[in-house]
Length: 352
Ligand code: NAD
Image (cartoon, rainbow, N blue to C red):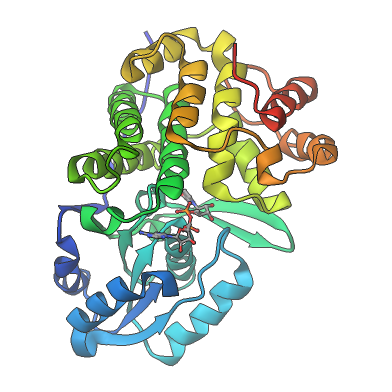
């Protein structure tokens, strides 16, 4: 028997097709009167549609969110929020835009309505990662967790396949690490396994018809469920490594998750054999780490750190940074072990 604690944390979820038409009602629901709209230029069309629907409630727009939430960008957005007396944030975009929204909420307690367009899952966590002076730090607080998430499958139909694959594997990583988290419990286990089934099914079907609504609904539902795991239990070695590679070496978030995940799983497999069996069953493959690697190859995702332009000579520094503090992990984290893991990931070797 394994004792556990389960706590329900609430974010209101609106899921469907065409749901961006409900953003205004959701803003009213959280008491917003003057909205700061966050959306990158790339998502201008959607931002305009949402902006128009908000009418006079739209106070200002900011399009400068970038990956890993640099504090300088947050300060610029904060100035826009304050000078326009905004009392609510609507963020349309991936994890970077959501991150900026959370950084604003952390500083002002402003309510947030998030409209995700990738599978990062950040929208359902109370965690904020920020970068300052080349170091990424994370913190968690109740005010960081968005009040409402509006998932509109239509916004993901045109998400480029390459981005969909890496973002989908990023989501998969949340579910995988939730299963061997020290806080794992029956509810997050069930959610994680369903997320793994949906995401692997979605990624296999994606290239044949990237705008298939059912495939996209599988991926977006899986991303929400996996994000819920991320927001509920602690993550381990895989996330720490990706955090180091992203925050200290500037590697792209979702691509890094995609390359590292099969290797982090292979590292942990001897210490968590039952979890690996459950993952393999949920995916319908014989072995979980190799199954994830093959899924990435089949979907056309990146498999090596070399392909992300990570210099081999930086591996020792990455090992040092990733092992400088201890954290829970099924298998003991050693410098030698992590060096071997990163070497395999650099070469893109298929786990045995
Ligand atoms: P992202 O938000 O940077 O998006 C990647 C790219 O995709 C961007 O160029 C963006 O403009 C583009 N894009 C987004 N949606 C699109 C669409 N529908 N169509 C076309 N292009 C689109 O990347 P991401 O992987 O979603 O998020 C990464 C960031 O999120 C990182 O900073 C990471 O640390 C953070 N994150 C945080 C948490 C958390 O819980 N705190 C969880 C996951 C990720």
